[in-house]
Length: 268
Image 1 (cartoon, rainbow, N blue to C red):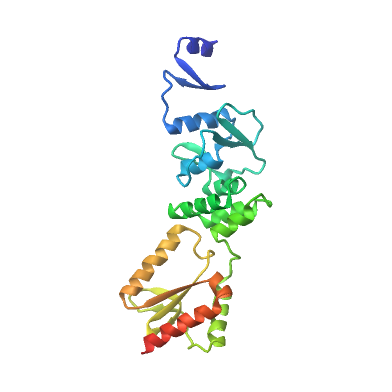
Image 2: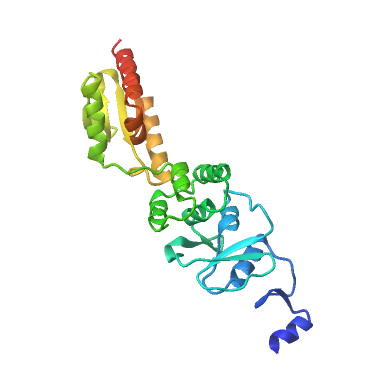
């Protein structure tokens, strides 16, 4: 009765069943999103295209707001409620005050509904916006249970079987032997005052090779730290060649040719 009275006297305005705004209908974008989440039931979060838009790596695409809940509830005009039995606490967070699926869970949800080109673009925007966390992504994928679009999502993100440090080094050393390239110093420091240990180096030619894998670059922050280190080494006259696990497996001949050219140029 208290609510009915305030609705009649225009002290409350109905947004959705059980969700009201006091005194006016003017809401921020975040307010509209929060109202949709509240209307979707206890524990619901913003998800799918709406979550991607709120994170800032994709346009919403339509006026429909998407939420996900673990319990069943009928939808509302303009709100589509997805029911999920697999949504876990680690899949949700708050972004600018609104409960929302994590970036990785959002990508997983999008993988099942977006066209390949749109999904690839979303992955690029996540990376460009410094939103990507590989540890979080691997956890989500591990629990995905073969959901639609997962294989394509893994391909676009570039997730590979993570090699150990020794696997990377063994394959690289094998490449040097097979292609009769000069032996390298492995896991040694570069110039005493720099305190940098690099994967492989040829000091006489001032050439460094760093062996990269997502296992060792799980976040954008780690990726950027390596680039700052590369810049410092370049300023000292070193040349840095980064070799990924995927290239080491798929393009050993091309890598060997690059190394030979760099080593020959350095020696001359």
